[in-house]
Length: 116
Length: 112
Image 1 (cartoon, rainbow over the protein chains, first blue to last red):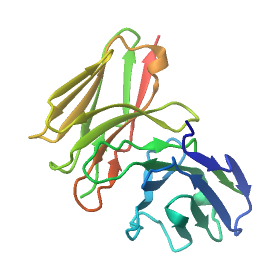
Image 2: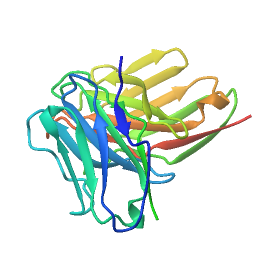
Image 3: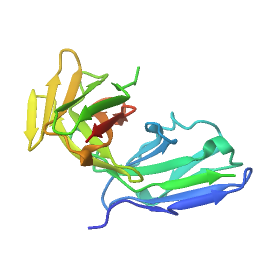
Image 4: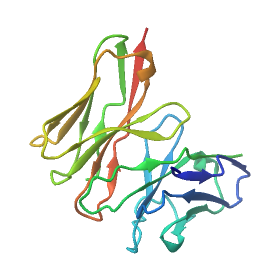
């Protein structure tokens, strides 16, 4: 079956431009996460959507970052006025309901963002 | 705090056992996971353990859980060069929105 799909797989942009990264989760998964992974580093949590609840935005590094999830499915992560330090791999993951069941995350292959 | 802690690096010789350790934060977390990330790829689920278990074995992988100390370990028997990767520990909280929290990852180097 289809896994988590992210697009584009690679994005090169100039400093100051806005970018949009897309994530298509596994059908029926109610939880969706965005993480950032800088070169050689661990996962930095960005934002978490769970069903119709208000998203947990506690990991967004600045107000240049925002994300939305339309219709409980596709999510878009937007970075405005990109800076060189935004260069990283942005990973999306989804899982089934978060409430008390075994719900491991399924990851996409990520979008590698390079800001020049 | 919310930090799941892991050591950053581990180096072993091919054929030896590897033990990767993790300290998690929430004694009420119900599921604990180990993920593997190979170069240039996303994370893949390796194994998991439910919090009412002490140990789980799956082929070359053994997971040990010490709930009292909130300590989780992953043992890889007969480590192979193909096991070289980053290994992430994660806990799924049963409070605060049921979020999954990851450690920083342990980079395993396997020397031939």
